[in-house]
Image (tube, rainbow over all chains, first blue to last red; front, side, top):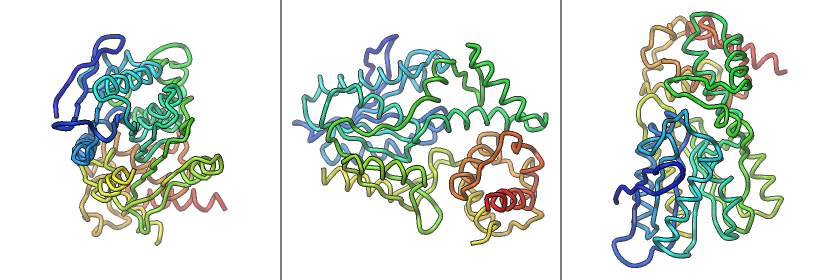
Length: 269
Length: 85
């Protein structure tokens, strides 16, 4: 496991590369992290899974998108387009390093949106999608982000007015801030318009969610999306597992069932 | 599962309370009483409640009165559920 900087306009992106000690990997996995603070809360689970996949013979690259983590730029400089390009740059780096083997784009929450859009542009008919609690529409992530500001200012008693003002600011070309993150209109617009897309070719989809309610069940919006993809002939393995929402819980939590199921799915690939 | 029971399960999970909600009642204060309930946690709570309990929270529902106590939140969710039928 090592840290590497890869070139992606503008500047550099920090990545963690888990490569096989020797020989060729059986495949490549690129991890696309979720939005904002979710990225940090999910680090432990992502690192754990990356190590497991590496143990199984995969080369894994975890990339910090523009303005995130240790990559160049501030969050306020990021745009949706830049993030999609970053994923493509990460794939190219993996290919340059490891050749043409099977590829998985692995996205958590809004990262799944970026990953699925990058997959559209990849031109690789066999590339697969590994989705952890994927957001089917970016609109909800933007709403959650803006609501963080409303929650912070609840004492003022005008959440509706505040949210209207924030949206008006974005529409007028002004960045907005919430929870310590500044978001540009370009990023907000891209996120709001983003929809989870099925692989264009015959790549597989592994769609996994966690829930604490018993028995665990996929979100209704997920179930609809999966049904539509299957109707289109896509191969989708979908499962809801028991586990906490580790990308958002107050403390860093583990979801061992998710690790085991993901590992098994990619071991069988 | 009743609304209160389900809501306490969600609160316990999102705030990482490790079972502390077992002793919560309607009167238990939430906002400004539980340090874990910061603005990000409020939004996580709203999102999880929307997703798992099938309601839609409106922008003006994001108000201190909704999150004041367990009871106020239970009443809010119950009202939303009833409005759907």
